[in-house]
Amino acid sequence: MRKAWLRRGMFYLALLGLWELVFRCKVWPPYLFPSPQQVADAIIAGFQDRTLPIGIAISLRRIGIGYGCSIVLGMVLGLMTARNRVFEETVGSLILALQALPSVCWLPAALLWFGLNDQAILFVVLMGATLAMAIAAHDGVKGIPPIYIKAAQTMGTRGLHLYTRVLLPASLPAVITGMKQGWSFAWRSLMAGELLFVSLGLGHLLQMGRELNDIAQVFAVIVVIVVIGLVVDQGVFAPVERRVRMRWGLTLPDWK
Amino acid sequence: MTAIELQIDRVSKAFRTGRGQIGALQDISLEVAEGELVCLVGPSGCGKSTLLSVVAGLEPPDAGQVILDGQPVQGPGPERILIFQDGGLFPWLTVLENVTFGLRERGLPLEERRQRAMEVLRLVHLERFKDAYIHELSGGMRQRVAIARGLVLSPRILLMDEPFAALDTQTRDLLVEELRGLHEELKNTILFVTHHVREAVYLADRVVLFTFQPGRIKHIYPLEVPRPRDPDDPSLEALVREIVEALHVEVERALNEEYRRA
Image 1 (tube, chains in turn purple, yellow):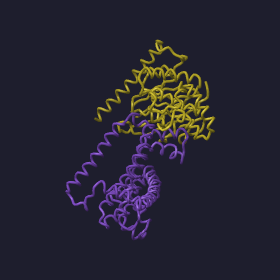
Image 2 (tube, rainbow over the protein chains, first blue to last red):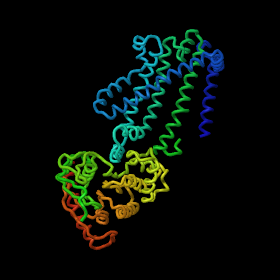
Image 3 (cartoon, each protein chain N blue to C red):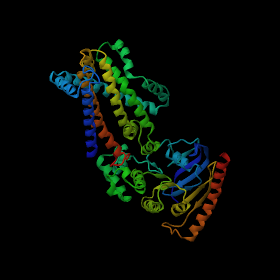
Image 4 (cartoon, rainbow over the protein chains, first blue to last red):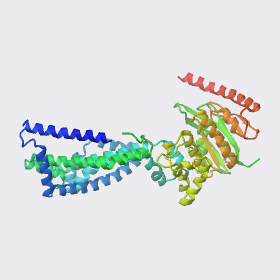
């Protein structure tokens, strides 16, 4: 475990070194390719003039709302398509079809419907994460051995309890994997949506960097976006996923 | 003679066998007395397991009915517990939580659930493992949890679908012995599906032999020898041989049928 971290640290140090080297060789002019130092300065400056913290707060608030709604909506859709054949054949096929569409393609329509505001962006986030969530929940429930359902029924489980006490816990490992995937879909959709107009989020800061011809700021915001995505994925979802899989007996405890 | 508890009354049912063919149970009638242990033997695909599902209420019969204590069976219910070959235990719950699952559905308070569950866990000698998760248990322990999970609901009838088939011989012998002890103590009615004729003859009050496609009752062998039985008893040995020979005829028919289709 510690060795893995060491290797990872070395790798990123080497990557930074290579970056610095490319910068010093002047392969590209500095206004197109910043040095690590310039990017670091841009991040610090962004925190000092509070544009970055504000951008982060705005983006996180949006994703909190959009992703939260997506989980609930996706779970409901997934459960319905998994448990009802008519739903599966109709709504289920539509979900699969729409999943092929990058969610940012909804932005033009959302702008026309909702105007230049948060709702338009939330709609894009919702379209990005809900479908992934619904598909994961559907597959999760479909993958439940029928024996669990039969066993519960003979023990007297009826109606809603079948969902809350059997289907949901039995599909939880798949659902958590779906939530993890949904998160990255939501995060990407949010950034794409924020790019396109004055939204004050991180995506907008990226766009401002372009307008000011400030490549260091563009890189700085990219780094922040990647770090936030990574922290949530590795810091929140990965441990939960690992613990659930272990408890369900799906992996050995010393699995790496 | 004790009262008739379960009546399987002219039940017919088409079903899909494990090999993707259509099988049929035809006109099965069987009366089971309270506390009786009946073993069902027959070639795979004859419909023994389907019959258990019908009695459990998980599948409706195409014709006929199942009557428990004078009431026709409609749907599954905790007075008829089905125990599966691989247990069907919930991996997200501990042993104790698995055993209390049905009591929770019944709405019993937590303390009472725990108390009752611990009683049956003691019966199957698993009280020390109450906090273990299912994947931490051996196959034999899992089946004992499955039995405990059924017994805790005080079912009228235990329906056991080859519950020990996936276990090694030693574990299997131990569990058969444990089941015999439980039956002697609790006197539940048990319908027990097995491939093992010797096991059936060792345990059963009656052994019911099924024919292959259509699945019908070929013969019923009553056993008067009191339990516990000596596995080496020559009269039992003779009966085992008799049933095995009759079973072989059916297994051969099943194989011929399979070759013909292949």
